[in-house]
Length: 194
Image (cartoon, rainbow, N blue to C red; front, top):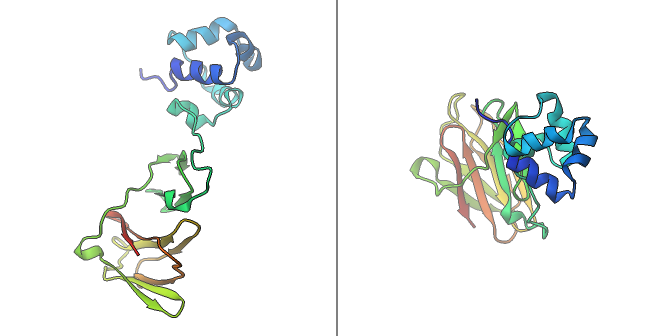
């Protein structure tokens, strides 16, 4: 049987919070020996204890199950370090300004990795007044379409959601230098620098 939470994760997170095994046990209403068994891998916390255990350790249940806390290393707020996530179940688009644990529809989402556009995903950007008209010569069917276009710079993010059978184009206020992103429902994320 695979473990759903590792003893080393519980121990590391407990020590980071400055808790003894007995203090953690008191908070959860279990014995110190139970916490010791979890940390040595000779036992597992009951599933009903996951939420209180995560709270006592100062992490989310997802972080507890992943075995590490997510720390904000992006304190400067530079949006060029943004991460984009797309739910494969509902198509929800999620943005974070740095590393994050993101889940939707019960699925933990990995951050999208942008690739250089190929011929069928070429991103065209033309200046129009104070905006850019961004388009992609891509079919827009219910099975295969461009889901969104986004502009990300150090201080701005603009995302336009697109829908099947509509145009694969939008006007974006791209100021300064940054990156344009396009997400294909079949082939993933593409990006160009402008």
